Image (tube, rainbow, N blue to C red; front, side, top):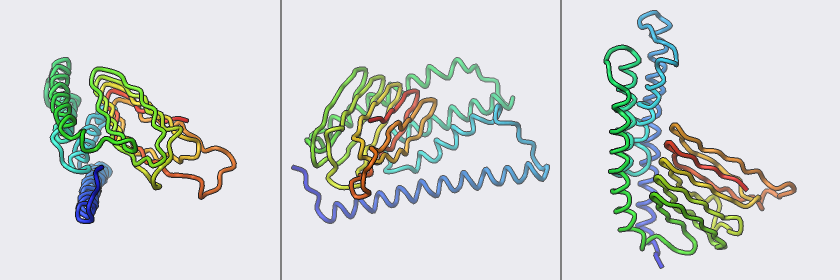
Length: 246
């Protein structure tokens, strides 16, 4: 059994608050930047093309915010920097400031994905024995598939990650230890399907990048407010998909 002391819990809360603050500041900087450019465009100082030309800047902004999202980890940092690099190259190409063969970008993306797979596999293996229990999900799937049915009455959330693979997590017979409960989900060139009970209200906080993050759940009719539990699903889908349903 893995028990957290008060100091460990406090440290975890401090880290969570710090990471939330950091991502909020980053998002604020992005919004201010958009406002400044928009104002300069209205004043005729700069000429901003339409979204068909400027869409790569969205990748740059998303990568920038991702750098400050949650605790720093090498896979997340590499992924954020990769998004910013790809977005920058595509944007320069769209603006005619650089001539880059777009077909040359994707091999580098695939090689970087391979590096992330190796790193995340080693990281997960080193930490798995400390976090897996019947009440907690911690799954990392690479080039494969997995289906899990959890019927715990003290479900505490966890982490589900797929890279070039798929996972089905069935929680329809589970109950939360406390509400809200959070599950972190990541699908990179893969997919995750979550099945939840009809008295769980799903708060989806997913960020799709050339992928999908869909919440298809609905609450059962006739539920009282104290019968409804809040389930937070957060994460990302990159060239992949996350689907939550009943």
